[in-house]
Amino acid sequence: ACCGGKVLGFDLITGLQVFSVNLGATFLNGITHDNSGNLFVTDFSAKKIYRIKIATQTFNLFAQNLTQSPNGIIYDAPSNSLVFVSWGSSAKIKRCSLLDSTVTTLLTTSYTNIDGIARKANGDFYISTWGTNSVYKYNNDFTTTPTLIVSGLSSPADIYYNDLTDTLAIPNSGNNTLIVLATNTQTSCSIQDSIPFFVIQDPRTIAKLQ
Image 1 (cartoon, helix red, strand yellow):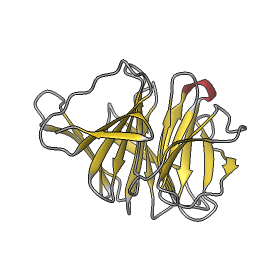
Image 2 (cartoon, one colour):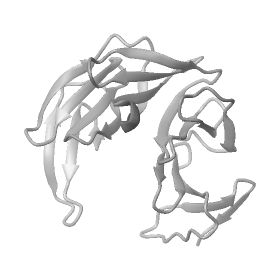
Image 3 (cartoon, one colour):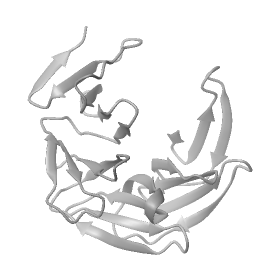
């Protein structure tokens, strides 16, 4: 979990903190991992990306001098790269090679303030943007016209696609709610604690679970 300038880790069974790395960063935001024991974290304010080796809890600066503030980030195994989204107007979607840290622009969008990015197993990407308070879907190389998935959100933050249940989780930072978009109508969801929680079978219909 990103926490200011640190990355913290917690045991999933006990909830105890078992990991802490102080990067001395300004504002850590997006986080992802590869299949080789590394975490990658975006520093929103400093426009940098860090790499953390989980086993040794050591880190290094992986990419810097980015033109826009990096936000959400995800590991893309087929291309052996990181794909991340940016803040600001005409927000860019970029790729960072894991071989040499080279950063290239995949797409300059018409959106303002892209926050989150998620990847489906079939290669499709989802992004969330505060500019239109919506989530859009792109194909695997961002060459097709995006599909609007859901609108009417409230500052949608970092998103996550669960391939096991075919659901897209969308936290609304503007009103402290969590929406789960079910792309498979057979999907069921359960609620724990008292988190405001919504399920969408059809983007036009939102059923609030009590």
